[in-house]
Length: 96
Image 1 (cartoon, helix red, strand yellow):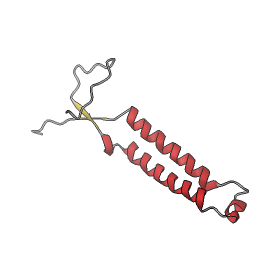
Image 2: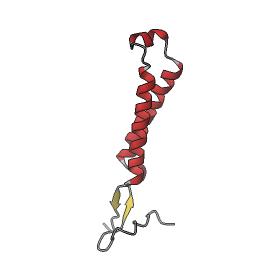
Image 3: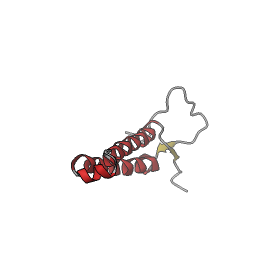
């Protein structure tokens, strides 16, 4: 089973060198996972470990909860971007 996916039918590959997807090494995937992980930590802190004193400091807004939700959404957007528009890395000949 080849590592390479077929291009969409509307994309011409004539004259192009063979390429493969960057996959897990794509920086967008790494950034998306890190942002999502930090968002998950903030979400848990906001749901289970926020005291009344913390809420009073923030004028009643659970900042950890909302920041966590925002970071998870941003992380998912990065992962979706990497999935829908993968980077293509040209394959080098074995002799070079």
